[in-house]
Length: 79
Image (cartoon, rainbow, N blue to C red):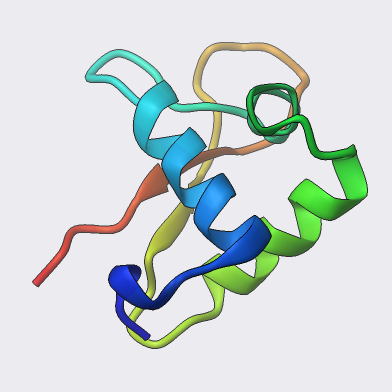
């Protein structure tokens, strides 16, 4: 799947991660849900789909900030 082919919640979540990600941090699921206006379960489902596309468009990364909010999500490098 190409990023250009994303639509619906998947495209919305992808854009939110792109907007929220920076060199110092990446967004948690709660941040993504808040930015997109999706409820947590809908955001989780879209993140899950994006983590399991071929080629991957999102990566799950352990949170090193010391919070207990779970992993963070980053855009996968584009080939």
